[in-house]
Amino acid sequence: MIEGAAVRVMGVDPGLTRCGVGVVEGAPGKRLHLVHVSVVRTAPDEDHALRLLGVETGIAAVMDELRPDAVAVERVFSQHNVRTVMGTAQAAGIAMLLAARRGLPVALHTPSEAKAAVTGNGRADKAQVTRMVTRLLSLETAPKPADAADALALAICHVWRGGAQRRLAHAQVSRVEEAARAERERLAARSRGGNVQ
Image (cartoon, rainbow, N blue to C red; front, side, top):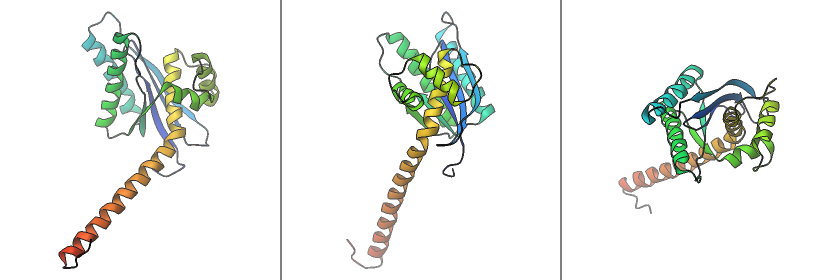
């Protein structure tokens, strides 16, 4: 991907009853564009496996139609309600698996990271996040429910922070490639009879 070029990021605010899905296009320092926002819903009284299938089907449909370059998923953290965190973690796992099957890079961002990226405050409330997402994407109406706005905040966070993450990953790959090249040269010299250490 060309540095500074627009990237299309799908944000996923995982949940079993409501799973926010937002797709944003942009680049650090450039205007952001809303591509898509929706909420995948499943009924709480439905069979658990069928609910997971519903989340999978909804996320897969958006991925296949809109073809994001990367997927940003909210990092699941421990909550008091174990049943809620289990469903959230399962929905997050589905999003990550779908991305991996399509060869898409996945980034996990904490709620605080996404809030800080869009509002400047990692402790911002949902209303502040929604207001800033609405403003940053130049929307006439706020995305609802909050799961939709949170998914867009995750996508925006990754658009803005992803450039730095890509540079760090590229630098890491370059160091590994350099070490591998040096090792190949050392082994080639050794096999030619030069006792290189």
